[in-house]
Image 1 (spheres, rainbow, N blue to C red):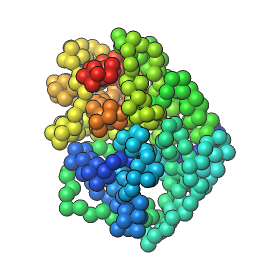
Image 2: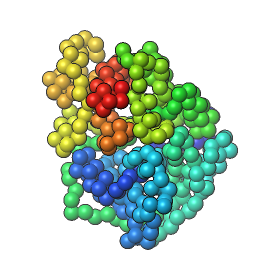
Image 3: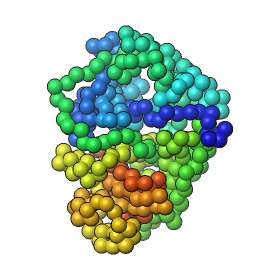
Length: 366
């Protein structure tokens, strides 16, 4: 591992926190639709007077849904501006103070100086920095903590816990930024956080008849954290990135990709629970094995579920994308299964973005 990669060791994404209009209902939706389980809660009952936070978990994936109790609150401001969206991507680290000192000394804007929080389960130290838009990265040090989540949260026991849907880990989080800002934020991740560029796509790679975008994938030293950064590119009509920025009112997290070990079972369950996925035309599958070679999965089942397949030099991957999970056409999810492949489905870009454009056209935003 190079010195550049080593100065900010990250164990991986600890949790993703969404600021939402109604955290209780959002938590119920993610339990019902995606198979998450109740983990922890903080709110008025725990002495937290200004907000309520519900923590859900499925294997290594932890989501937090937080709402403010009053209109005059920065969480309410965030929801008014962006709708339901990702506020925090938190990393587990061995030393939250050193992580903050390292990143702020390299140019990051501080969000939270290192702060130790305690309860009956022990102590945790948390610090944080700002990144693109209103998105925040927190550094969470919890080697001295044995509670359900973090200090101040109580275990959340619920009679209603649907079966998990096979979601295992966060594969990557994708950020959308404005015109000409991709390289700025890639430089931020490189110089401030020690990330390297894993792969790059230009408008020749990611374009359709109408729209285009640019993307670079940044990753940390152990490649447990991968952040593609997208920006719009010139096209005949409004791209999906422009639509997102228009409705999110700025840069932010476009989608969270969640890994599964059995995408056919996971997607079938999610679909039965009401999760809506982008439609892929049948002609995508006509020459699938000619394009990607033989795969272990049944092609008929892949086609029936609308799953995309791509191959690189290390293997292949299967992926599918939900429609936006709120009324604003902003945040959505990707379900991905990697069978050796380390890439991001370059061969699927055209089919995927045409599917997104069909939805944009239905909304009148293309």
